[in-house]
Length: 289
DNA sequence: CACTTGACCTGTCCGC
DNA sequence: TGCGGACAGGTCAAGT
Image (cartoon, rainbow, N blue to C red):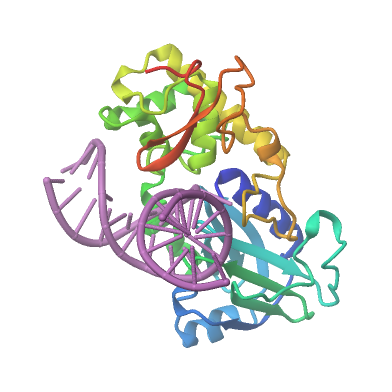
């Protein structure tokens, strides 16, 4: 679920809440969610102070003063929720916050800090993971070496997008956008939304895109991602921010999960089709092959 | 290499 | 109400 805007929203929250806190204990109940040896955990995580929370693509990086980092990928259903020691909100809390209701049955890892506050890593489908790595080694893990440019960096121009697409001429534009080596952080929601914004059919083969279409797509990607961050991301089912709150972008979405409803631009009925093996939402009038 | 498909998991929804 | 199958926002490995 979490794509760039959701992970960025979580990062902002965690970076406000975590730095300065010292890890006192770590508990987990599913090894694949936190595949680490006890020795490293005791030596480089327990007792370490959190320095900063960063993001690259859909990956969160929690830097510790032990020269180690927690690297987190939320995959489809991961959550990172912080609760202060006396958190007891739950029902009635704004935005149906999860705070006060944790741990629950999706909780895989619990980080407890010296002040009694906790960070919960929840993940219903168990695809996500947290790893403890030396900070210096993070850039050399496979994902970091291969991942493409950050679409919200000022250096991401339409020419960069065109360049990134050059090695993927024979696939659909949707498959290319979902490919993290082409561009960082795009997933199913923002692929559909930005292609609608650019009036490009998701099944369009990359080599058939004109320069004008690539320019429109670049502009649409940036607009959609910025808007979603402003709205706290998209909550379809699982996503919540670092304080357990849902995001509201889907209220502003044009096509995603809107099959059967009118296109906001031309009022034709939005369809759900399958492209690149994924559920895909289009306006059949605005987005033609 | 580029590209597609199945696997990793749990939960929900839909048709019979 | 129960059961099987399809499907869900992401990435890999393994196949063509």
